Length: 370
Image 1 (tube, rainbow, N blue to C red):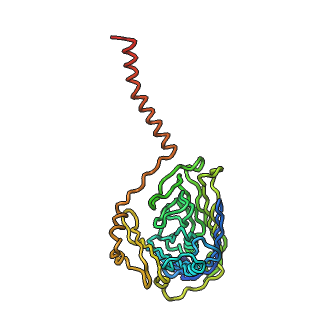
Image 2: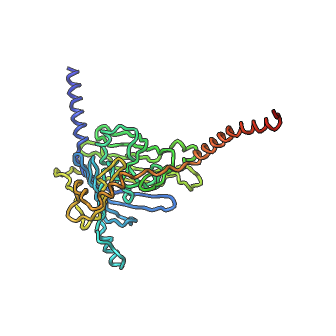
Image 3: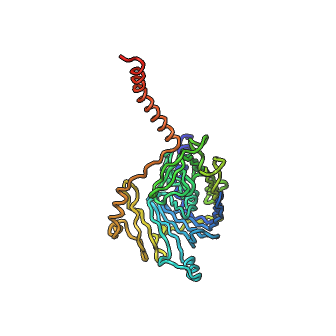
């Protein structure tokens, strides 16, 4: 009888966990992004995130000045990628009233196959995905290296290229029922890196004792709230540590801090998340077509809808962009100081060994004539 009772409890627990992993919800709150260093700044946003089956949506509205002057950011995605739309209409009107030149488009859209909605101009999207929308990803992924959920001052690079998912050694702990991460850290590799032709280029190695890597990203949920009898994130913190190449200390310093706080949860509507549509006249950069060398980047203007992947092949610049991506050569890796010194030592040893027999026979011929 005890065995039967235990089996029933286990079965109920499994059903309960599956139901929670598939929990559909909407969360509202505020995000505060503090950037430190030589160019400190503060960006604050209102956000709404929605999880619906394997699809998700993020709405981000700036409360403070944003460098790129986006009025609202909308992101829609799933496990195959997503759309990120940045509305510019209010900013365009301000520029027009100020007598400044404006373009014909009223929004900018980036379409990608990346799992994480990382975008350099809106680095706050990655942390929101991590807090609320990453359960399905972590349920399926058990790799030691995963894409970094941030796009600034990570992977040894100050700004990551948009259409690439760069991975770091990562450790995380997920909550049992929700499947969302409660803690996560990313360990940077050994080198600073730069960008050349949208590709990362290895640079000098970090100074000792950080030449074997250091903790680059730290994330943790600091407070939970009960929603539908489940502990959902109420407050979360993501911090980025960085070694500045020109810093005198040469030690990791905090350079970004994202504080995320939810003030309301509600059940998601039963209707599916709608397909994204252009906001006014959209300037689109589409990276859904890929080659072994990376995405084929295509640009076009959209008004009523976005092009399907097959329609992209009919664009006038498709063949040129495809050929450029397919035959793109990776940039040559510059040698680090230690590598250059090692090569110099090898050359000197080789020259010494080569010169020794010449000197020997010259010396013998001079002092011991035959």
